[in-house]
Length: 308
Image (tube, rainbow, N blue to C red; front, side, top):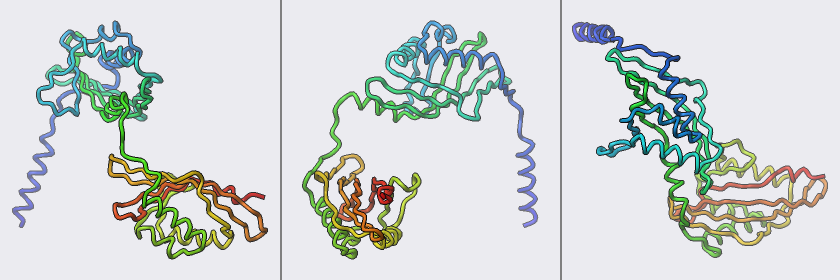
C-alpha cells in the first residue's frame, strides 16, 4: 500500500512539473483592435471595411458543425453574409457578454489568436423571429495582422426557425369537440357543485399547477391546490362557473402535445358582505395519452376578488 501511495504521489508531482508556458495572453493588443473593428463593420453592413480586415485566403467555420468535408466560407461569402444582416435584420446589438472581454494569445510558434465572448440580439424582418443569444468566436491572424480564420460557436436553432418561418406549416389539429374538452367541462361542473372528489379525480396525482401570480418557474402540487381551494371556498360561495365561447382542444404534432384551452366566468359571492363578483379566467390544461390532466395553467387576477 505504501508503494502504491508513493507511486501516486510521484506521478502527481510529475504532472505538476509538466506544465509549460506556450505563449502570452493579452487583454489589449493590435489583433483585438482588428477583430473588434471588423465585427463592428460586419453588423452595420460596411462590406468594404470588412474586406480590409480579412486575408485573401480567409475562411470562416461553424465550430459546432459535424460535416467532415466542410471547407469553410470564403472571404466573398462572408462579405455577402454581412450584406444579409444589414438588409434582413433590425435592432442589431452585438455587445461583449457581461463580465467578459476579448483575449489575444501570442503562441510561441508565432501564431496569434483572438477569442471573444459576445451577446447577439436582432430581429429578422420578414419572420419576426427574435435572436437573443451568446456567441463565442475564435480568430487566427496572419503576419500582416489580417484575419485568416474565424470559428463561430452559437445556437443554430434560431436560424433554423427563421428558415422554417417562410412557409405556412401545420402543427397538428384543433378540435372544438373532443373527449378531453368533455373532461374539462365535467371538472368545472363538479367544482361548481362542490363535488370536489369528482373534480380532482380528473387530475393525475403528480399533476403540476402554475398561474400568473406564481413566481416564474414555480409550480404547485395537487395537494397544495386542494389546500388553496379549501381556503378560497371558506371565503367565497360559487354561484356558477360559465364557459365563455367554446373550449379548443389542440393536438400538436410536435412533442405530442395535448392541450385544452378554455375561457370561463366564475360568478362568486363573498360571504363576508354578500358582494357579487365575476372573475374571468383562461385555463390551459395539459393531458396525457390516457386522458388525465397532468398540468394546469391559470390566467386570472385575484385582485378582482378584493372589489369593494
